[in-house]
Image (cartoon, rainbow, N blue to C red; front, side, top):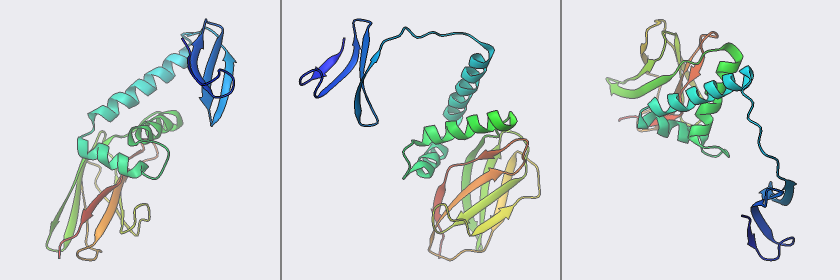
Length: 188
């Protein structure tokens, strides 16, 4: 049943009318389209796409709440949610190279003027830490030499009592992966 606000063709209508028309808003336009029963072919390509999408959604839900908040911060200012930003990165990597390296459990410790970022990779890879005092502007880059699933990236090139943003990425072309944007304040 279509829901109508005001006269049918002059204001706004949304929904299906008698399996013949569909009223909708699209990019600010009020449109009417012919209703067509959706075909749901089970081609190999569609099944593959559904599997990749399902994997991306399931993978996002395995992230810790702090990792999901980091994806929300990464997507802030854009017209997508953190969830959508993550799913896009996952699907793009799966399409491009056939693999995505989930990076999770990200935390940071400060001791003796050195910050150490801890994270866990789904598969063993070399990691790169990017940090800066402005989100998205990375003035510090540190690459780990180890290829462990547990990464510990250390850096000491920062100002005290400053808010920094950081992210981590897998730099292996065969298994890319990224995190959202995290933030922390350095101690005095």
